Image (cartoon, rainbow, N blue to C red):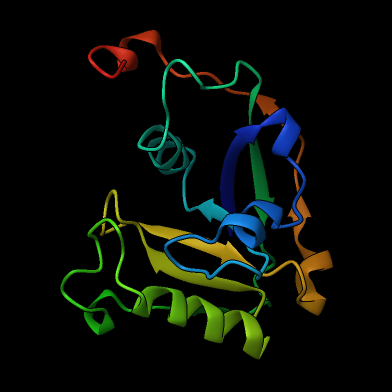
Length: 154
């Protein structure tokens, strides 16, 4: 399975440092995780909803990651989530899902529904999992948004 990550060149390391330092919807501060999406287009939308046109770095890169078929990917069913799971700020129960998964070490990847498009999936990767080194992190490719996407966003 191929998943995608879009980030600045400066933050292209797959160490989970951003999630460890700041936390996320799915992870508490203090635990490393790398966030990817099922498709490049979903990765772009996930990046875009957090983007500020004045602060978006010019050196974005798209990075493919291949998860071997023999590695387990656990999944969070959207029906198991509270009705307000898409709200901002997110309900604390979501970080509990991610924290339990990361600390259990039960798999290298966790599939979660996208807040942007709930019928699509994002994948959290656990850089501390022993199988993390089996992921094939591909070559970085320059990425940029179509300038028309910034209309009315700045």
